[in-house]
Amino acid sequence: QDPFPAPGRIRVVTIANQKGGVGKTTSTVNLGVALSLFGLRVLVIDLDPQGNASTALGVDHVVGTPSIYDALVGESTLAEVTHPTTASPNLRCVPATIDLAGAEIELVSVVAREHRLRRAIEAHLHALPAEERPHYVLIDCPPSLGLLTLNALVAGDEVLIPIQCEYYALEGLGQLLSNIELVRAHLNPGISVSTILLTMYDGRTKLADQVADEVRNHFGELVLSSVIPRNVRVSEAPGYGQSVLTYDPGSRGSTSYVEAARELAVRGAELGPLVPVQPAPA
Ligand code: ADP
Ligand code: MG
Image 1 (cartoon, rainbow, N blue to C red):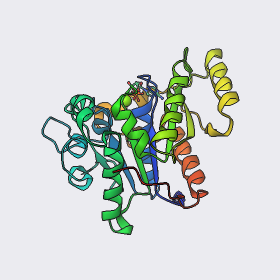
Image 2 (cartoon, rainbow, N blue to C red; image 1 turned 60 degrees about the vertical axis):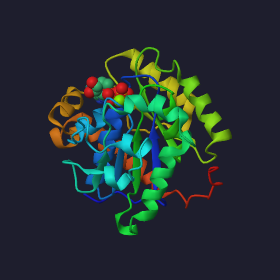
Image 3 (cartoon, rainbow, N blue to C red; image 1 turned 135 degrees about the vertical axis):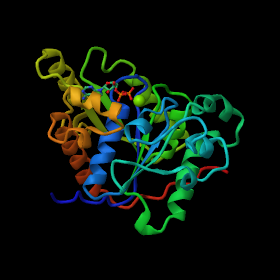
Image 4 (cartoon, rainbow, N blue to C red; image 1 turned 30 degrees about the vertical axis):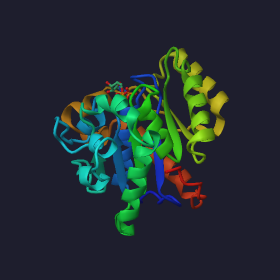
């Protein structure tokens, strides 16, 4: 099949929703694998101490593994903590170990604590030769609005919010959106919500349609037309250290993530170069 179009500029996409279990990690992993299998270079940054994205990409994350913790709290460069994945040579991963759980507290006393991830990513992208720079940097956030998610919102150019087609889907979303506004006002003028992805859609229930309609009414064009169905293959794949695309390429979970990634890529190709925003205070 034809490769996906490259984005007009490097896209740093923060995948956030403070609710757990809505498909953040699953979407980060499967969109990342899809983009990489269709010719784009992708860096996945696991920012959840649980390390689920690392697991799904077949990247070891036992304590002691060079990880995002070393780049945020320590002095490591991202290059030093970036690992290859089993999914694709185009896809690399910065894993998270359980050490990261302490980072929320350890970072409190660190200078420019909200800017640690942004600085690390910027330095990394500058240091890489152009032909090795990722087209996409995907940041998988933990289910909270603490200092880790704040770092991801300061580091990103855009936010992708997965919304589960379930009861209470929109609950708490207001809080996330107002946090994004606060970050935009004070820390990262470049950030905005670019994409909403409907996940775990169950076509047999009326509720799923109601939620999907409500989300589309509220967010309009931000919502991808591709919807991710609830599909058992999606939930099985991480147990084998795989994405659903490699685990069961013919499954509906796999094809829907490929379609969602294609949409994301097509939208990205329409983006112009990033308007330089003022540098963060030192
Ligand atoms: P989050 O990162 O937001 O906490 P996850 O991506 O870990 O959420 O998903 C929560 C659970 O739901 C996981 O067990 C995952 O395997 C499962 N899951 C996610 N998406 C789907 C889907 N489309 N179909 C079936 N199970 C899914
Ligand atoms: Mg997760």
